[in-house]
Image (cartoon, rainbow, N blue to C red; front, top):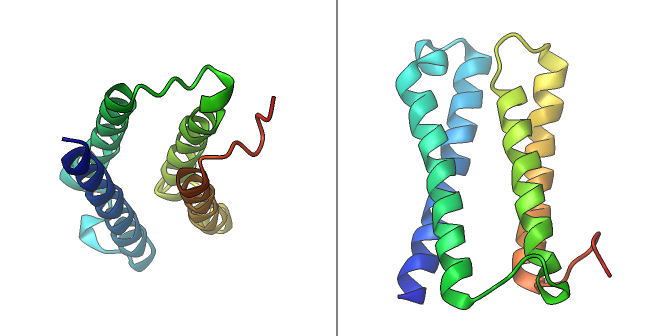
Length: 128
């Protein structure tokens, strides 16, 4: 069960990243699909699925983000919220172009931080 949840979680993460890059490219190139509701919904639902699968993994592995040994997971959840906010700013057509680019690059910075937390399982900011 663990293997299925983990690989599905990773697949949806990859899918969300690809959709994010594609939607940003469409936005920058003026493509008609850039602001279609169906792509917005697909992107939102991939993020929601990532959260649900992550919570299922937490439950299956009995991880508690509110104890000292689980602070890395709490940081990961906070970083995911920051990543999601950056994605929303980057894909907002009303945001200034240079802010969109900064948010696009910043989103990948948060993804790198999330990946580091996932691989090392070591809290960086919430060291207690």
